[in-house]
Image 1: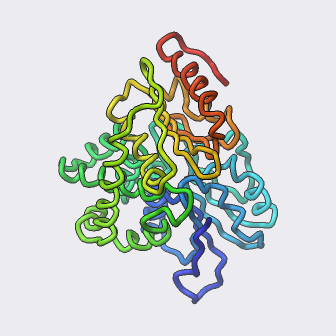
Image 2: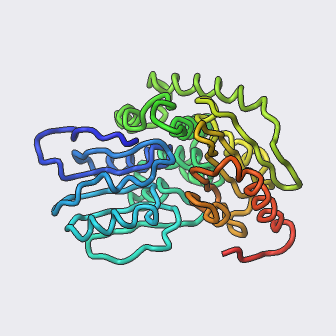
Length: 341
């Protein structure tokens, strides 16, 4: 489901659209950009796995579209139609873009390095003008080394870094769910709340919704902490979460926490659904050698990036097939470099 809203002002025609992932990276990327380049725009976003968003932008001449943190490959047809209709598109992303192309109406700022997220790309474009938001996004995307490097370069205190880490984790946590009904707050509403603050530390200190997210996070995490692995072996483990709202909300954050606590191990977190499928989150311990998205792309509805990827709908009957593929794939980490593409 997609959240669409009227422009912030009715003074000008509604020809501008901001299309963004509803997670920490998408929120912080757009926030940085609009702090530096304010404009009235209709926002289009959704839950984290709702990435085929460009299809909701009307194909009209003169449309100006900014896209942040959603896969170009997953939106290729809609992107092509928009450009052919005369739209101007600025695209910022760090997911795989094997089908990227040159077009006079397209400006593509893209980097698929496992150490970069979309907010870091926007931070580069803006020359670090609103860097604390990029740091929070990097923490939310489980890029702790990147976040600490940027924070150290800025000379931030430890308590400030800790606050940004918590913020990034909570913004990311809020995006996980099968539908907007699973979330504590729709991503567009959360964006409008945080967009009132140029300083993320002020948002942490005074925004009521921050306290709401923090309370929900700890409640949901207490359920996840009681889980035992569905399958485990040297260097990797698989967890299966039940079909419940708390599990859908915590699944991605739980995968990030597992990866952060054991950086030499790879993890998969499967979340059961009522329709007989699972939503899968994969974290690779060695994204340069064994990209998570390469494994996930073997399955229908699979994709993502090198360090973190997923499968939107894995049939429950295929769980053991996935576990075997996961085991065989990441076992190579302890053997020798292999090209699985």
